[in-house]
Structure formats: structure tokens, C-alpha cells
Amino acid sequence: MTVRATRNKEHFEFVGAVDADPALQGKDLGELCGEAPDGVIVGNSIRGLLNRVQADAAVVTTVSSLAAVAETIKEIVSCAVPVVTTCEELAYPWRTAPRLAAEIDVAARRRGVAVVAAGVNPGFLMDFLPLVMSSICRNVEMVRISRVQNTAFRRPQFQYKVGVGMTQREFEEKNNAGGFGHIGLPESMNMLADAFQWELDRLENEVLPVLGDDGAVRGICQKTAGFAGDKKKIELYFKASDGEKAPHDQIEITGEPSFVSRIDGGVNGDTASAAIVLNCAAALKRSSAGLHTMADFPVPYWNIR
Image (cartoon, rainbow, N blue to C red; front, side, top):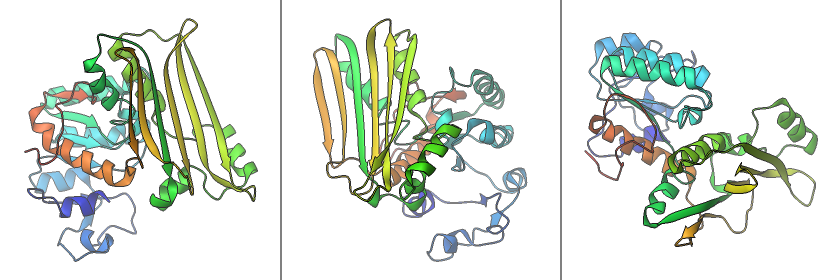
């Protein structure tokens, strides 16, 4: 999706590509995306590529785990190339992975480049956008955000990630093993809490399957809530299921003033993630060196240069 979006975006040009999968190495990037060949051949060495070409930015779209992608990001940064990545755990890592976050931050500052994790969620709909919308408030007491999606319009990898087609037993086994569910809700919650200077002392997280009439899993329903004492301050509700009847993205702020903002139909995560990644890549040169989150990154917008 990101490759296709880049090919169709003015002022963007691929100068190289790297993948860890030997089956993809040596292949033309355009052909791998089902489009016309573009002469960019997938390689196996990041440093080897960046020693041969001049790149204004690197886009890393590999895994959700910060631990798994950290060395890749540090290697790119060591070549003095700024990075935008879709790694969800890097969206706001200062509480969940402070050591790795600090290592990337120091490495980026030393080489004078910026690093940011971007995406539609986390990175926009359930954290950055609510922060922007709170700018019209004199006071905020609570934030409730819901994102409900119809997985029929999402890529197969996403459908698998949220359990579509699993049995209840398979869903429970995956959930009990840990690491299942939508990745990024803790990062979104921590970004909001730190920005609003709320000290959360308790988190509640619930992950449940969405079941069809035949008992098969149609998707996932996940709710994460953060409390300060006995007061709920943040609630993030995420639901993604096959055939969802009322998809939407909704932000509800309780404060002065209180209001609800709703996007009926919701935002397609695949299309939007590719777009915001590229717009952030263009904004990298406007940012200072170091590791950033969307809370302190220059506002990305369409056609930014």
C-alpha cells in the first residue's frame, strides 16, 4: 500500500528498497506491487544501499514490535538518514520502552536526523486528533474515543490480526498467550495522559471476540481505560469485525466545552496509514533531530514539501 501510494505521489521517488525476505530480494519493487517495473531492485543490506544512494528519508514498514525494529532504525540513523516508521510501539515509547526510546533518540541526535512513528492508529485518530481537538477547550475532564471498523474493507493481514475466521478456542489461546489484539492502545493512552498531565494509576484492558451466528470469530472488541484514583480519565474502544454495520470514528471530550465529533463510515486504515506516513516523511526535514512522537512533530498535511 505504501509503495503504491508513493508511486502516485508527486515529488516522491524511490531510490532503493531492502527486505529481509530472501524470496523478495532481487525482485523489481514495482512488479512486486502488481504494477509496472520501476527499476528499483529489492536488496538485502540497508547500509550497502545507503552507501550507494542519496536518500532524503527512509520509510520502515516492517513489524509492530519496537524491540524487533530498533536495530534497523539505528542502522539507518547511523547513515544520517531520517526515518518514519509504522512501528506501533514506537508511536509513544517513553513509558512502555524508555531504554530503547532513549537509545534511538540519542543516536538520532548524534547524527542530526529526526525519527517518528506514524500511522492512522496509533498516531492520529485515537491520540493526535483528540489532542488537536482539545485545543478549543478551557478544561478537559475525560476523553472517550471509539474506532469501529468493517474488516471487509481492510487488507487480509489486518483481518488475520484481529482474528477474523478463527474459532473461539483459537482466539482465546492467542489472547492468553499475550500480544494479541490491536497494538497501540497503550501508546495512544500514554500520549494523551502525558500531554494532559494526568497521572494514571490504574489501567484496565479487555479483549473479547466478536462472534457470528455460526459461532465463528468475526473480529475483535477491545477496550482500554485509564484511571486517576476512582475517576476514569481516558477510554479507548476499538472494534473491528467482518460485516460491521455502523463503522465510525468518534471522539468525545468531557470538559469546557464538552462535545462529540464523529466520522460516519470511519477512516480506512490502510489508505490513511500510507498517506500519513508519506506526509510525515515530507515533514521530517522541518523537525529537529531526535526521536519524536506525533504530539511534538511538525503537523503533517497533504502536499507538504
